[in-house]
Amino acid sequence: MRRHRNTQQMKEQGKKPSDQTNEEEIGSLPEKEFRVIIVKMIQNLGSRMEKIQETLNKDLEELKSKQTMMNNTINKIKNSLEGVNSRITEAEEREIKSLLSLFGGQFTNSQETYGKSPFWILSIPSEDIARNLMKRTVCAKSIFELWGHGKSPEELYNSLKNYPVEKMVPFLHSDSTYKIKIHTFNKTLTQEEKIKRIEALEFLPFEGKVNLKKPQHIFSILEDYGLDPNCIPENPHNIYFGRWIADGQRELIESYSVKKRHFIGNTSMDAGLSFIMANHGKVKENDIVFDPFVGTAVYSKLGLLKTHSNQMDKVLFKEHRKAFLFPLTTSSSRWPSDSICSFWCICIWDRHRLQHRSWLGLHAY
Image (cartoon, rainbow, N blue to C red; front, side, top):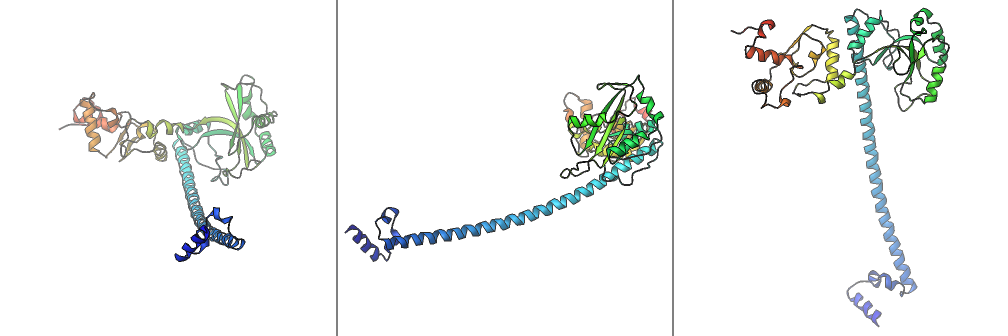
């Protein structure tokens, strides 16, 4: 009776009995009505699945388009990096050429191609010129006296056997101490592999004693495995062996980093670029250099006699004058260090008419 009454009420409201049937009532429904409800549930589930599938397809298309955009961006970055690398290589070559001409040498490269290799073979007249070169360069890491090289260990050993013995003897005699190091570019070797490479050089006439802490002479095996870290070859492209002479001055870039300066101004120059520019200009000790933006750069650290600037910053001058007159009331971070910017010292001396003006050639009227 209750079910008949509910059905009658639903008919009066214009609804079918199956539209308001809940899960508890499904078990009491006749088989025909139960099948109808199941079919409708399956149809609703199918329509929902279609909507979900459409949403997933749209998301996949968006992901594909984003992936394409990312690939294009990565390719652009790679192309720009290749251009930057080529410009960096040109800057390195120009620095080496400038420094060699400064110290009486000449740039002659015996390698056919070196643009994509971190190792250059140069012909330098003397070891003194090589040491002077490494005292100034910030692009080169180390320099070695080349005794032999090849594309395989066999070629390297044959090249070493053909190297004049009289050039080896001064560094291999019994009273000397030595050490052999392994340098690999773009690959890491195990300790066993390093020992194996060192033991393979036993045919060389080493008569001295091994000293790993403070050797008189250091010999190095250099292996070049290319520039691609994602495709490292099993065998190196080139192998070199030589006597270490000196290291470059790359630590100066970190020593004079902007982060370590007492004063940072609007014209703060990158330390690495400063040294490279000075080397390109063949600046040497006791040279007089005029640079319009020397304010907070590091050119005066290269042994220059005086570095003059025509850039006068009112704020910097005011703070430096205040610090000169009232040193206890001015923050040290607001004015440049005299050791970096000699220009400010000259201005202060002349402004206050101190006795230092005479030897600077500055006169007050």
